[in-house]
Length: 102
Image (cartoon, rainbow, N blue to C red; front, top):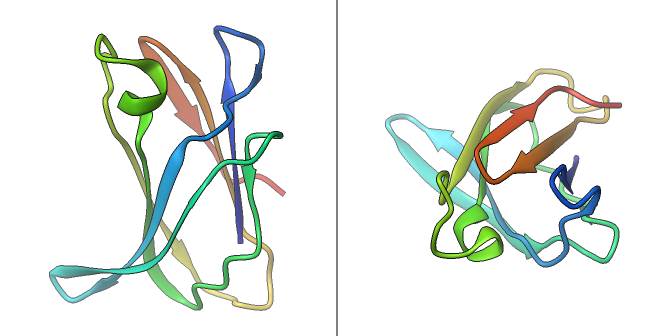
């Protein structure tokens, strides 16, 4: 599994964004991994297994105190752990979007 954060306002990767990977365990969430995006805005190598997961992006620390979205949470399901799952985040000060990448 991997993620990639792109700063749409600057037109380049978002470097140093803190990201948590969590798994749903009933009504609770279990922390599986934490990391920061690299110089290319990426985090790779996570293997969360099947189930419902979420990525929590600390966009407030990256965008600053005036960030409209201080945190972005993307919840998704992994069905086939043999497939690669890529969850990109396109970020700007007042908007974000995500999709299942390749």
